[in-house]
Image (cartoon, rainbow, N blue to C red; front, side, top):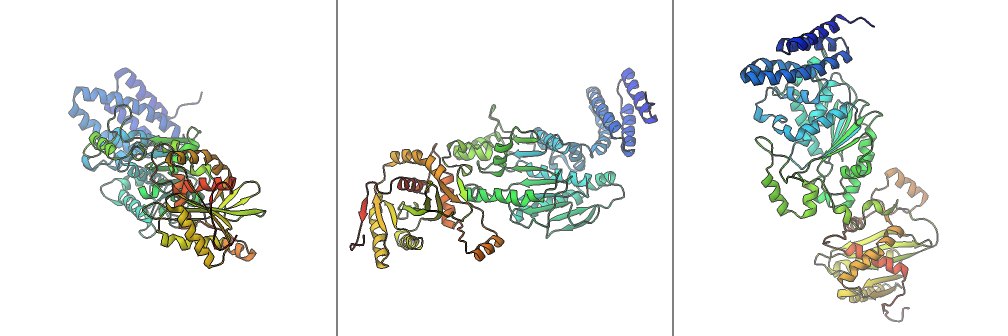
Length: 581
């Protein structure tokens, strides 16, 4: 049996004393001194063993002292406990926060008035740093403290490991600037005790050696090519200017700008692609990440990651709703501020169910009603394959008033695949859309096209035919009556499977300048989404079978195109002029 060191013998004597006499403040003081000595000597196992005992015994002492005399407890134990918090800051995120704010008036502190709810998230961050998990996703309603908490976590990591590199990404440079300024305040303001904690963790090492209000970077310890903390909007420069070291973190906070952003599947897909291609690309092997935000809808990057990874080892997703689903009481009734139960209940009354559930309850359920989820559709890179094919197109006619004229244009191949390479989608009046439709028919060399005949569609078909005659362009223009509203929904559902299986849409990602240069050199035509195409895809990907759709023009036109491909010569009204056919 190995001989105990002098420090280990002293610790054993303290424990034996407490076993006989009971815990008192002197015993706790003595053990805390031994913990400091063990830490300075680098004996981590001893340090953590003493820490576990100290926490257990201090709880006993606190109960005993407070039971006897609250003033005695506050006078003796209060200052003593602050010493322990300082000792524990390298190991405990909670202790770091508490010590950081110890000099602030209680009502101005961030954490303690919010601890009733945020304590579970603090433990999640602790588990992330202790490598019990590799990824943490946290979703809460807006303005409930989630961003400030993850900034404090990054500041803690910077204090522990000033030569590490961590980065935070968000939806815009403006938000990144706000995060940068808040972290500078945490580090430099006399309101906080960062400098005291830093000097204890890093004796002799300078604190802030560089910071840039232009680049939103903070460097601690010593100068390096990459900063200790970097803040960037997703649309900012990442390659070559941001690095996440093996002992650092990629923090992602609020990638979705607002409700308008969230309602565009195209923008949401682009956001997710930029997250994967810009942000994740900066992580070195061993780096970890966390994502924090409000779940606006099912296309939110955080929700997509949850759906893909929840339940996997190393992944944890924490969702805290506005109202507790059992008690229907607010989870964010903080001291001095926060949001009352009445506030959230009133909000629930004002919003429709999907928005309330997603934005406030962190449970977007519209996913179950989506007929064409983004990830269930097929995509291509803009280059049409070789092989025998024909151009196919239909027009779902509209004359303004909020509805959209929808004209998907595809190339159908022998195996049944239809590549949708162009799309006219406009809310304009007839005078605006007519020349566009005529131009696309001629420009894409369409020889056979069908119009929906309802609400003036047959007349619109006639107008198009007359315009084509002026250019002596030969195209068979036909019109077909559409079913009533109930039949339309049945028709859309019936052909949804064919649309998913056979139709292939342009990818939201655009070709790089290098790819375009190669295409030009080889004479390759690469199609890209237009603004019309993006608007049409937004409508398609948010179409639901449960509840009400504001518009169905894009989805209806795809259904018509599927029916047209199936039988282009079914019963129709044919428009002919001047014996052109």
